[in-house]
Image (cartoon, rainbow, N blue to C red; front, side, top):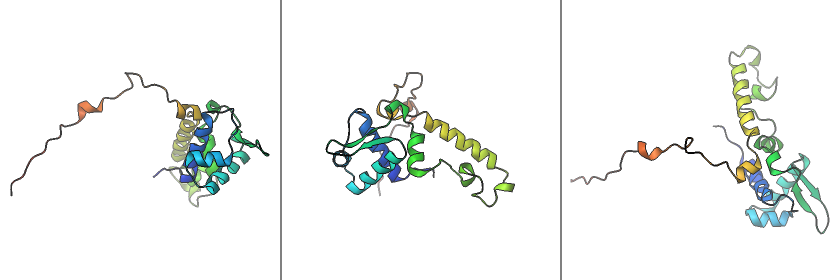
Length: 158
């Protein structure tokens, strides 16, 4: 199963919170209260995201964390890479030399292609998009209700 870690999920939640008011400085305590996560987790995530360039930090009484870029300029790919490392659905998709069979693997190139598609898709989704997804047009909407069988309840006599 392809899945991001809870840690990265929590980091995205924190960034989305900050993206609601990107010009504001957010203290670790304030973020902790608002997202409902343990303070140690929030502090660790804020520090990691600051080191990776997603956030800027300022010390002092009025200090805290702010987004380093506008919400529309921070992609999900950047967030995942900051918190988990390079995106790779297989070892050989991330870096050469990590898989013992990569030199004679018949499908390595295909996995790398799939990895590229996933990376590009994540690159297209920004924090701003997460907060304000584009409206679905009528042509894009799929009415699944027309395809469902009506539910009937039958009583079985014993």
